[in-house]
Amino acid sequence: MPKFLIQASYTAEGTKGLLKEGGSGRRAAVDHVVGELGGTVEVMYFAFGDDDLVCIVDFPDPVSMAAVSLTVKASGAVRTRATPLLTVGEVDEAARRQVAFRPPGK
Image (cartoon, rainbow, N blue to C red; front, side, top):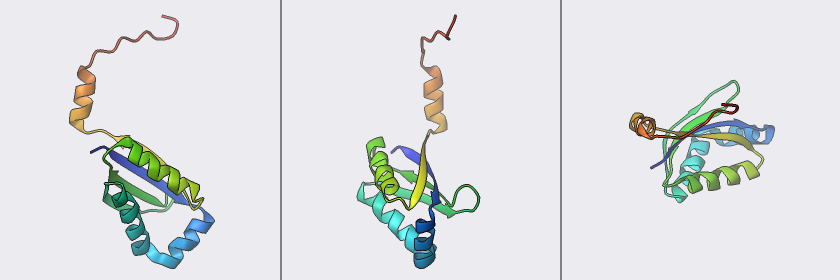
């Protein structure tokens, strides 16, 4: 299953919701939305600084990740970034593939 790193920051409205529900309430909400599309939450941490929340999630496909991302962003309560994660083996496979590339001007 494709794995993604999710980094999120709450808007003022989202922070109010977090204060009302607590961390456990938000974890349950994340588990629910990810699970509805056949995914799982591997880990979820709250943080402070540029990001308020960091998760690693597994989804059956990138389209499922995109569906969640669009829905969450449309709420206006959270700003998110999703980064696809690759295993060491996947990077090894990519390194073995031949790619014909000509840099600009060469």
